[in-house]
Length: 228
Image (cartoon, rainbow, N blue to C red):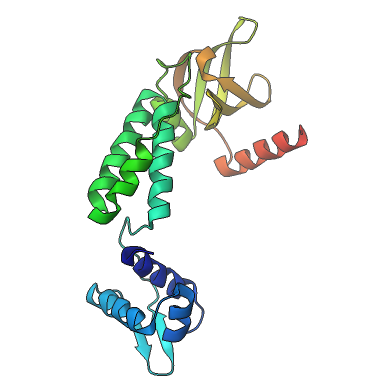
């Protein structure tokens, strides 16, 4: 385990502890010597991390301490970069650009010894870019989702029949190489999944839909489970 990861882990252990933890307990959990632990504690103190300790009593992290942003382990960094690479391969142009920018910011903000982790994860190839909706930009849809605005969709179903729907957008879902708008459809009075490559037009309405988005999502999840 790199030292950067170990310092992060010490903070996490102390943050979740309900009582003081001795140096020996910390050293055993991290599989390091007491001497190494004491050096790590001195480094955290030098970084102004509010850890207090008394002989025979153990270490305590002061309440309310927030870790600096991007103090991540190598595995967490790889997960973030790998996820960003998948989004860049699958998402609409604006979200793909945001994913690439995220990788760049991660690379700049983290310690130099962890940058190869981000670069390696972000350069893996994914051949799952949606194939019929490259021109569909989901920016307005995502904004409507966040602000609970209704959408009017011009939609063409699997039989090619054009319909006009007013929907309450809840989330954008990915299934293999297909993207869907998951929404409550006022026309059908039920949850519906709209394939983005069949959406002909999108208008954001001024009306906000009633109810809480998280409650509606739970209802959608229950409906999906009931369908088996």
